[in-house]
Amino acid sequence: MQLDIAARFAGAVVAASLLAAAPALAQDTAPFQLAQAAAPKAPEPSAEQMKLANELLVANGEASSFDAVIPNVVDQTAASFVQSNPDLIRDLREVAKQLSTQYESRRNEIVQILAKIYATEFTTQELRDLLAFYRSEAGKKLVLKREDLLKAGFSSIQAWSAGFAREMEVRVREEMKKRGFTI
Image 1 (cartoon, rainbow, N blue to C red):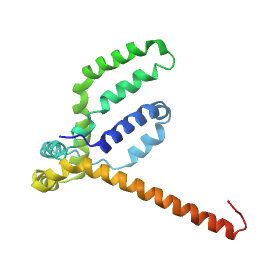
Image 2: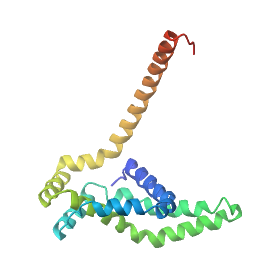
Image 3: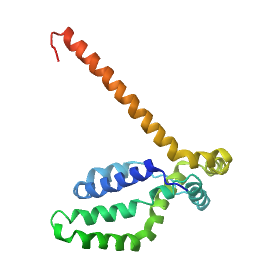
């Protein structure tokens, strides 16, 4: 199954953002703890909901969309040492490769985090319905075509954005001209 480019990118961005924000979050956890204490706790999902959520993540392709998170975090961490130790780049790359292999088994932790979110947000019946869809021919087709659909969508949106930007440039110039400015 092809990996979902957008989800891989999003996963890498989320992981990098969390790593970058960790020191700041550690320094200022009191407001978060207060907000968390005030928020009602969602009930723990049942074992059946967790099982169905895990099956859904495999069926819809999301389980494999986070395959790049661990290697990306390891690579980014090793690369952060290159700036202060540029002579060690080869060794740091080798260490990153070694550690990526060692920590690959922890990928399931990521899937379990997502499974718990799905199991908490959807009822057992909703999970069954979603799973039925992703196991149907239309659902399987969506999973197989998702990467191509996203690529085509991103490309089309970029082309639209470029045209819209040109249109806005003309309109801004017109409006500024009405105010006596030529730009």
